[in-house]
Image (tube, rainbow, N blue to C red; front, side, top):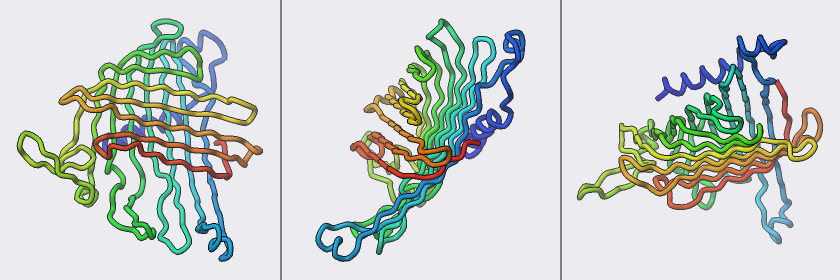
Length: 306
């Protein structure tokens, strides 16, 4: 699993490291290809609220402080009819409430590599690989904010998918992908996480313990159909909207309810280095919990374009 992750990272960062200037003429473009202008950001966000005793006693509220960091890189390489795209999104945040243990508020590793080739002006065939996990350990907390069992960490769980299919791209900022042959692997590589999150599942008269759909020491391999819709555009002056929807329905080795993964990020630039952003993440995976999980955050901070 770690070798696969490192391979994806190598391909992604190679695209970032070896980016070059656009060729001077059409002949150079066809011969050696060209990179789109580099898009790399590093940011630090802050959030804070506090209440005096009188306010807390009459209107409620718990003082808190939060810090988050993120790194985004998108590299796009063109050659003849083909386009290679590498998209990296790394996010981590922590929050501390008064009188409670600190806990992470946002933790996400997202790496997506794709090669697409034109069939028509708006339709391409594509082959891609996608990885999703988190950096740090996550814990269950009781009503008083006391830390309990570890329920997630790096590679536990982690999701890797590979697929081929068709994509429709009517605009540079909008694309819809249909992956008719998509493989997905689910990993839980930490025994403590598996023990703390495993549930008994009855199957063919046997009781099996599973965590995030996987059995201990095994990888859950599924084949299915995947649909992705993505949008990334400045919708107003200094305001960018980026959203991505990914749906996956397994049809082998058995049919399952459709999984949904939603990401929305709105960023408003105050000036060259200061911005305000809203992040919304949504996940539905019946192997985890049969409810829609939602994470939302609003923060202000500094951004640096590298």
